[in-house]
Length: 483
Image (cartoon, rainbow, N blue to C red):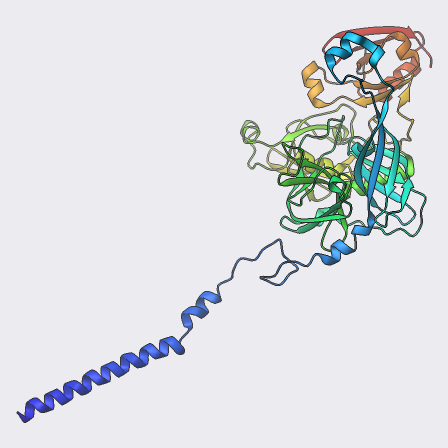
């Protein structure tokens, strides 16, 4: 009996001891041992690349960038002439003819611009002021000025204006090439005539070609953002968090005409070059490498036995061009220009567009899967290194442009120059028309305006011009030598 009592006492003590131990262990893990929490919290977490300057968990402070730039973005108002029918009905207009046609009327359009200098130089888009009869600039403080168009460039869709004013607020250029994906940017402009509007977004992509610019030899290397941009924002500023100009807002991707998620800005690396040229020469000094280029696709990589899909593929070179003379040839892959990697035609064009004719660039290519360095002297569209003035491209009453690779393929030609404007002169008198592509003169191939001019100036007798129209119709013309 005594033994049973002792056993019960011992059992009770053991149960109490075990219970106490479990309670103590539970309490320790709950209130003292946080080793599992530490191990989790010490694991590196994800950080938002769109907020590099802000403390983790806080939104970026964009007030400085907005307040320091909004006063240097202007409202550009233009007046253009349009022909308006009194009926506005194609059937009645055709039936009654000119009796019901009114005189051309002025129509108002609007965009934005960015003040670059305190004495009144302003950059905007060419499509904002194109064909304008009158251009007016409205400052953020409501002052209005008549603006003069200093120059414009269709290939980049940029224009330079000048107003007579002093001590204006300005925006300094930033380095668009230093922009990173996910970096915060602001779009400043006048959408829907809502002046001094600021929207924010991040850099979504760089070197984007969207095919919106149909001008010959157009350059598209857009910065893509998700900052809200709408009609009226064209020509406005894209600025970084330091309030520096990194782009000019130019286009949107939309099926409705209004913002639908993506906007595109021309990078400041191109803008700065174009503005400088227009200010100094009245036209852009376009440097040409002299190659036909395309993306390196999986098919090209297979066909040419490339070890990697990278760079820009060289489909051919223009005879007499800087690239051809340096030794670059079909099948090469351009990897970088002056140590800047290029992986698309747009990125390559952006790098070349920063240079003038006569500049030398270092071109790293891949040939037989091995790197090879070339030094190339860039040429102008005439095939030489001359700096060109506004009227230097006119000869025999015509202005000339280059023939695109697409046009060459379509028309089955390898060379030629295109008449882009035709005024009074021997070519017009001989019957040539604007758009005609001159491929040969006196049986000699024409690779540039210099070839054309040189052959004609050296000719003693008649001149035979051969070529093709954009519709494929081939033609030839004969006239006497001399200007």
